[in-house]
Length: 78
Image (tube, rainbow, N blue to C red; front, side, top):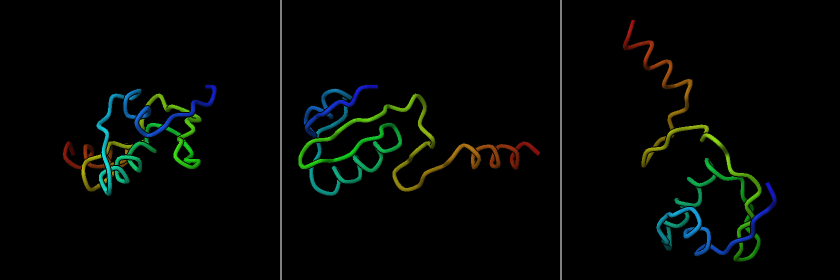
């Protein structure tokens, strides 16, 4: 993928995510790291890669990785 340079507002529009501020924006950008490889330069975001599948499933507080899900399913089913 060619690098894509966007402002935060453009990033939100492109990926159809809410435009936030403060701590919500900080957490949103942290969560986006699961889907995008990006670097912040000044007020711009350089998108280096968009992952085909996220490495983990996120809820509001905890990340559950795929090996965790397998372990939980095997525990319940056995």
